Amino acid sequence: MERYDNIPIIQTVPTVQYPKVTRYRASVRYPDIPLSEEDVFLYTMRGDRLDNLAYQFYNDPSLWWILSTSNPDLPNDSLYPTIGFQLRIPSNINQILADYEQLNN
Image (cartoon, rainbow, N blue to C red; front, side):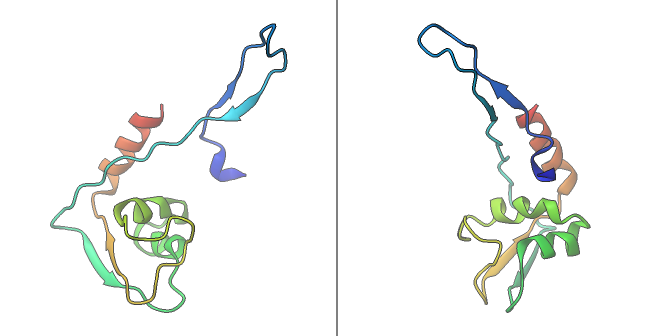
């Protein structure tokens, strides 16, 4: 569960009404990713996956969420984009990661 390591765990405080302590992970918030002139656009092909494309462009497959967030027309429940989809690859990765850290810390 390595991808969840940086997400804080929240614990409820027991009360008379709810004596059981519940632990859960906080919700992750993703930043808005503005369009940039340096962004790359490509058409997806058979076999493309967001994690593999994140590795190809960012050297980190865990950054698939940047591709997903910056392409709101993608299905949210799949790493596989539709074949022939024009995919935006944001180039301002350092600013995106800084915004992500600020939102989630």
